[in-house]
Image (cartoon, rainbow, N blue to C red):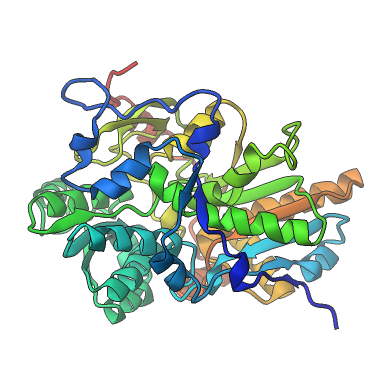
Length: 453
């Protein structure tokens, strides 16, 4: 009986997070205070984040200790398995070796708790009583609710309205873990009311939900804001994924040729690939391809300019340099709600600008076709976001067959699709919308980018 799982023991769990800022050839462009145009200071963030997370955000120290309290909770499901997709290889008749890191085994079903636990811990230590956040598809919202429940914090979640309606069971998870959930745009904030006055049927966006969560934070007592992607400290918390993957590949004597992850804000992709990029043993000649995948309907890395922009629609955040489609861009209502963000993590953006990582975009029906292929071969049902990575892995494996080259392909299986079965039903009924690249809407949003060099 063949075991396709590469497992680590609890003692093999990483004890430190990896901070890629220590190894960058060029420093990350600083966030800017939109009022002064000068680099933002830690004090500019103090109203919404605890100082411990602000310090991690700006740190250039390579290794940062993971507190035991965080490790104890992460050990509920970590280390996660690395799995060889032999049945998929056989189905595709490819010489490629395909592996996936299974982050779906966490209680909320995705990679998101890796940072949710850390953020809840540091906020608890700082005396925070309540956390406000946004969520796209609900993976982040349910992960933060899971984390705040452990630490006795209140949690309020602004969930993008189109996903609020598409994914009711994500809302159920959040409620089980004591969170309050509101569809965004909502009538609870000035931002939400203003947007609904202009467009009562607005489907929402992550940029709008971020604005509502930040407004809630700064107008409420004992409340801080928590973000599930994009920021440096979030990406660093996710590095536990890549560090485990590295140990697992070494255990079986494999070196990756291609590493793939889906990209919304960039955290699961970054957490997966960052520990490999500057590793002199594994990637000395920069031969590994790192592919971030995204929707054609929200093609931040593949179509957006590399510019300073706001991280939210209401322009409450500092200006950050990133690939962006414009802070006012509202993407179509694709089922991969976690990939509907107008921007991209500054660290991922810098590496994409320097051609160290690359990007690929896919239509919605194409990713569901890949997800069904994967599910029928391997028995696992991917989240729509994860299906973008599955699509790229299948395409690369087919190229290996065409070129008669055996490459090692490793992708991050960032979450399961058990709460997305309605979208699969639409796929089988041939009622799944296949949104085209919304060129006109993006061009309009890009006109409103701040004029910052």
